[in-house]
Length: 168
Image (tube, rainbow, N blue to C red; front, side, top):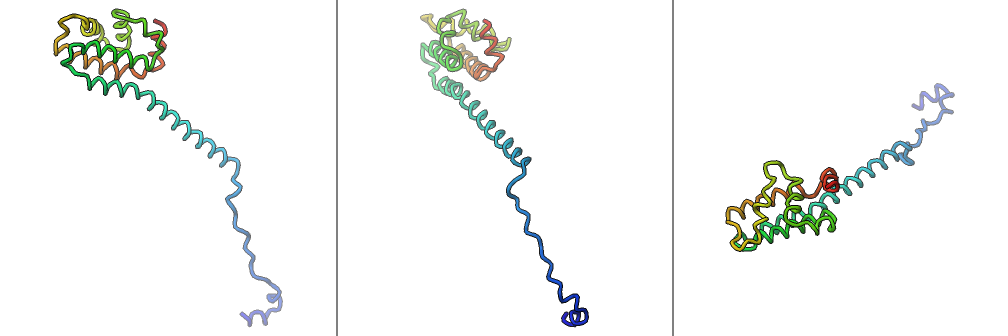
């Protein structure tokens, strides 16, 4: 290379190529800040929704566990199931709307969220709870299945279910 410099004196005055400074990622452009804010809002709202829906199902899960723990051979089994259903319902609905319901009004209230094939069975199973002879073991098993179905499908209530209940 020294031969080229001596051959051409104009090349001696040239300097090496100067590279520009690296392009920095900071500060971010406004569009990236907006995308970051939207992503953060989505993550926070999804976590809040998930937490709220999980919290809403706690009373139902506890009621199902308590129902499974009840003794079928107990003579007051229907009464215990009735108390359990009312306590579970009070976890989701205002106390004043449920506290005065008894017998036929309570059974009608329970039937509001049941499919047609299950409606009308509450009086046969829960309505017999104060009889001295009680109900048979088969009826107790039917009551258990009916109660499980109601707890799984009626709780936690959807907006439509809450609206339907407020209209009654």
